[in-house]
Length: 611
Picture 1 (cartoon, rainbow, N blue to C red):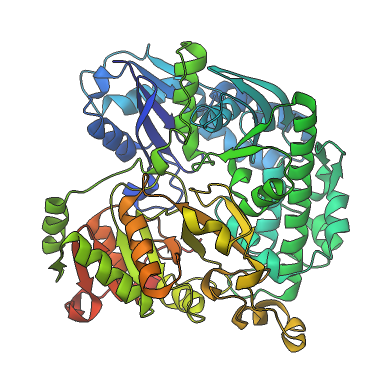
Picture 2 (picture 1 turned 90 degrees about the vertical axis):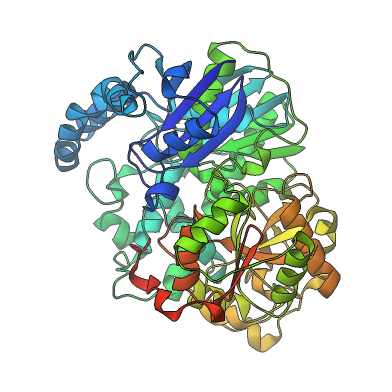
């Protein structure tokens, strides 16, 4: 049996993945173990986990592959400095010592780190390097349910490429076109993330969540920054940006164009201006993605589209591509960011370099993205006893019935079941659940449980069979990467008074029968749930439907703002005791907050660095 270990590291979202004979056995992000969000460090814990789960020692692994090529990245750094000299000297001088010390000699660095897993690992001859965007493209195509597809990847920057188009057929995948640094849709979006006062490389989804509260009145100004071609290709006017030469994303010229300085999150509140800015950049991003999709559909005539790279996590843009019916079918890699590069690098080695035969799975090969850690009932009980938890053990049917009953009574529940998800979304393995019919649930979960901005939306998990009755959509969306509108018969139209409301004031208007998951523009980020990928979650939603007539529940990730999603039963208990969650359901155990030792309460508001 042949095994491949894939690694992504040293930028953000480090991760490891293990394949056996091309099948995905395990994959996880380092942040879940280190408890440091978007942890960029060498993924020691994630590698330990995937090896242990696969019953392998490192010395028994056939190949190890890293998700990008450090020499090409170094070449970009040098050439960027030469192109922008002398303006880029500050950032160049900061980056250079690290590159010379570590990154140029990455093979050696990796070998020395890998040896720590297994003293019998003796040679670096089995270490390979993939290309950053090929890793993204491979992560999107090879696990997809398509024999043939065109693959679009877009992110900040890899070695040189920022956007690529590839064509995949059977076990072949070839990059056909690239847009190069400094022209980058990911960096353009990140520039506005920075400008609105959110953290680059982690706050982009907040910008997307803020957009529906605003109007795209700055669209023309955004387009002054970007030379947009009809086919979706683009060039950014570098005189407005600072990322190629400085230590910030934007500069004075950018500020003058929009009329304000970047928001300081420490002492400046979000205003209608920031909402309008968010709406404007979101609209331009959608236009670019739709135009790219249209042009590649026309050029290659292939009916299936795969997406990866950080921009593929923009589920609003994905939903627009779907709605436009440009492609017959769309599949998006759930770990679309750099974490998924570990998986793509391993798959690229297995199929492209080694030429192994590929058989296509009509669902996909991601196993619902439940590829992380798993704890059996004994492990759970031992860990809960160790942390001093008070719990009750219920039979399966009782557990499902009681949890559904609690949800129907507007209780907020921590739900920890089965394997942890790979990628940024909780999909019913490590989730916080609530009743979507409650008009208080969104605000309460945001402020009392997640300790985050009140405008942030929540996602509905819906039984697949009931999807079309509630949402304007009839395709699988298992990874919560597509946005669709609520069906008109479930909507509550706004009256004239409510329509005059601005910004955040719109939040308190009840918009549908499921207000907790209905965004201000009547959209929702949908997760479809089937019995074959997550039977326990499916049974819970079915039971909730039986009690309430509603086949939808609120699903958000099990963590607080700034914290990675919980990984172990102890993490789950700590988060439970640090928030105003009412119950924790973990394996067959159920924990009632009122029955816990009050001395175990935690102050979670200052526990993690805010994102």
